[in-house]
Every structure is written in C-alpha cells, then in structure tokens.
Image (cartoon, rainbow, N blue to C red; front, side, top):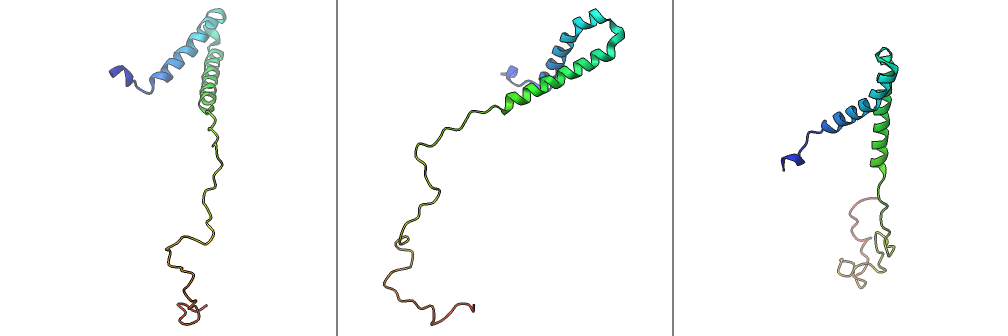
Length: 101
C-alpha cells in the first residue's frame, strides 16, 4: 500500500532524468565545451514533454447523447391542480389591492 502513495515530484524528476539521458550521447559527440547548447536542448525537451502531457490531459471522451431530447421544464396547460387557483373563484383584484401600481 505504501507504494501507491508516491511523492508528486517523483514524476518530474524522472522526466528530467529522461531528458538528460537523451542529451548525454550528444554531449559525448560534441564535448563538454558546448554545454550551453546542451542545457538549452534539455530545456526544449522538458517544454516538449510538458506540451505532450497537456495535450494528453485535454483529450476527453465525448459525452453520450441522450436518447430522447427532453426539455428542461414541462409546460402544463391550465397549471397544476390544487395550487390555490380554482376556476370557480371570482376575481377580487379590484376590491382590496395589496399594493399601489
């Protein structure tokens, strides 16, 4: 179980080691005198690794389509029964207004 909880910086360290391992044979050919170019190449490799990682994370599975297209709200003609608006009640809007318009 302890192997499952690894430190978060371990992946970055492994990518850095991989970039150095890619540049090490080139250092043997060019020599240590050209170290600024080699450091720049390591930096470019790390930027490339980051771009690949970002592209990898952006790929997501498409959402499955709904089989039946439903509206968000259903409109019922006549309203809901029992909401206090009976059809046989009279309109008393002129008798006692609650507020002045």
